[in-house]
Length: 597
Image (tube, rainbow, N blue to C red; front, side):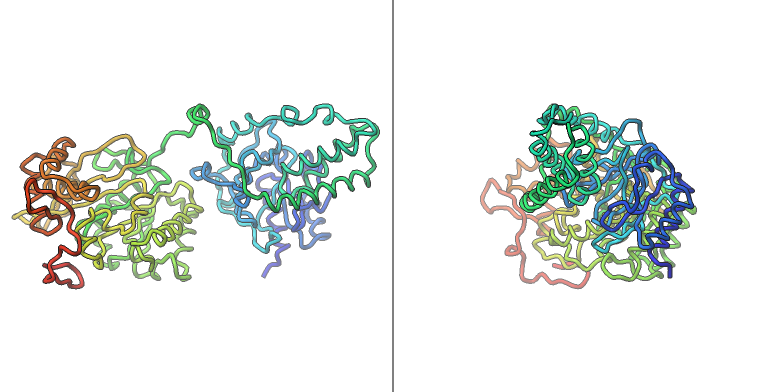
């Protein structure tokens, strides 16, 4: 097995020869092991790198940023309040640091220097800087790793406009509360006091691990302007004293201060436009859930979406799609029956299937399934992952917000392989739900168990199935949540299957009466979940919102009463409310699949 120094050596040579990046050796304390300043303008040679590693066999490696390597790196450190939120949808070379931060690599732009603390926990490494690169080892023992590696031909893009705005809005030191005369150097008698002031201000702008590598050279450069300069020993004494004081102070001031914009700044900020995987329905980098009871065509709809995305076809000939590679995780269908479904579509090599014949896919067990999926996403640039069904991939309690958050956060880790990844989860109502949950929740809420899921995803599609006397299944699709779009869509028939015929995917807003009643029942349950209401109030609200006609509303109320899902007072005017567990007859029994009265 190769030693760590050989790994670093080979990586250094690769980055130099394949990408033209200037590489220097550094120690685990991040300090350069050579006089490195000249390498800001002079490219290191292969022979120099080989000699460095002979002299320092355990060296880590760093890339010199700026014009020499055609690089600017954004350094994000969560320990100091840094967040990658603005960068989540950006695809460029990036690395995970040994301190659990991230480095985002961008193309160099003339004139951009180093900027420390440009945002809480965010630094810019430009002209005159360097960053530690994989496979170096942090002093904590953790290894730097590529999240999106240059080896995989990942593009390096231009610096985002919002980062340029950050840089433009940074005030130079002489525009702050610094004394411009002090910055130009002082005469004898003021040197020690001025040195303490300059050093103190610089130390507060740089993380402690960079005081020796970045701050000390700046202090030395400033001292040269003094008349006469302080001796090295005097300057070092002041530096050590102030650094010691700042170290003690920093123990009590680690909480980052976040810049909160006023409304004018907020309204002038460019957040960019929403980019869509499915136009006005599912955003790129977003998530969605498909929810329905069993045997309600969830898998058919998911495969239809996957087929449209992998081929760049519009959904129902009206929702434009962004063509992407797709991974389908199937854990509810045996491979034989799942394969039969696929024959109805026109999938090609851009569609991948994690099926039941493979080791069970799980987000909890260390069986390699989650890591393998993450690797595939990065290797094949998967843009959409469909999980069918969610419940089979974890052992958490879906009814508890804390557990739901753990599951969702784990899935979001897949975006480390592709920040633009879209996740679609298939969910059906829990067989173990208590009766009060069965009778008091809409289908979407009942299915996800915890409100966290419905609150966290961008889009929720609810499927309702009815069958007529001719054994034709009609699937009503209701978009119950569409967070990032201003457009509202009426429920529509999206799937039809006649007896002994293939599944058809259509878009029909002329909804059969039976489905209209089901839609009205869902709306009534939602209204009563908020507050008990009179019969006339419920009907008027349904009419005002255009849900259904008066006759359909009355039919829906009658069916909900008959199904014991709602109740009303004995005296008139009747006040309707949801059924509680105390209202359920004791004769109700439960089998393993259905609740039976």
